[in-house]
Length: 217
Image (cartoon, rainbow, N blue to C red; front, side, top):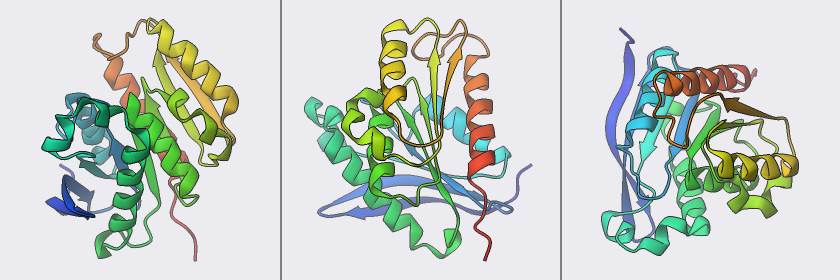
């Protein structure tokens, strides 16, 4: 069983609103991954929680949080307001960096669906973000920002998710830093097929293990 040094529900102040989140940091963790979920989802996303649990077992800290309040989420257009979601993700990153429990830990982003666009835009704004992973993402919604993304970026797409795969291929060409496109054979958009989310989790963990290494002082 993974021993923990921090496992709490957190309230993240963001202007006039409070965002709800769950912060989990294994005892031996030296890096943390912030999740940016897709439209209509939340910190309770089953698939993101599967990835988070896998990462925790690999000694990564994780932060799952709601980019929108319940009231904001009721307004459908907010779910696709990439600028707003990016602002929330970047602000949450700054909040996290002030916590003693994660001081000096390298930070990465895991984005799903539209959350991948906000993750990439935030990474372009915050050069200290060390790695980004996108699952079935829409990086094309951040197309103008992609050349400024220097964080090593892994795009994971299902082979049967043909429209999104094409959009990812177009976005991949625009990414500025180190990058890789992984196509999971036989997977659709939500990776619902048996064993596919396990593949996603493993790919993400390997990517973060490679790039979320502690800064030597």
